[in-house]
Length: 185
Image 1 (cartoon, one colour):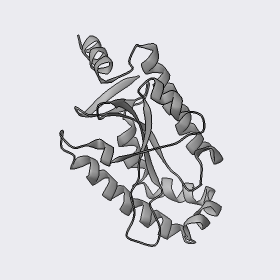
Image 2 (cartoon, rainbow, N blue to C red):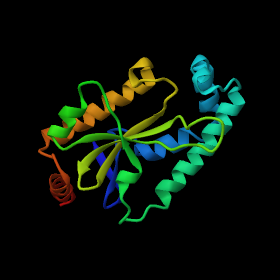
Image 3 (tube, rainbow, N blue to C red):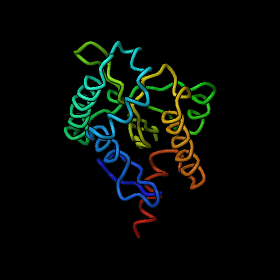
């Protein structure tokens, strides 16, 4: 598992055998019309929750939201408070365990000015003191992450990253910085 630095307070996972980190992968997918067409055809019934009945509208909304969300990350300054960007994500019986090891799930979510909220999600672990580690993301069309395989897979990725961090003695910002310094030598 590798970690790419976006800023001193924002890191993103690049999984083994992957050429791109998760943030790059997500924005590439969310701007790929072919990928989105296939995704929304496979998940068409879930669009009802958002009162969207056209796949072309879903694709357009996703690309628009992706552009807005990408600009949020591109415009971040090192001193920005990421707590304003990442909202807490409650996962049944998991949040208290994450807090015990000073890791907390977060998701980037924002309100659209259009007919529905955005369904784009970016998931991250909070390493404390305003440092976040992006583990992945998804198009979330359902009420809970466990309802669909692609969102349930994101929970697995979060858990795998959390376990990796813990197994390497990383339970806070300082531990992560020490780890990065060690592997950089």
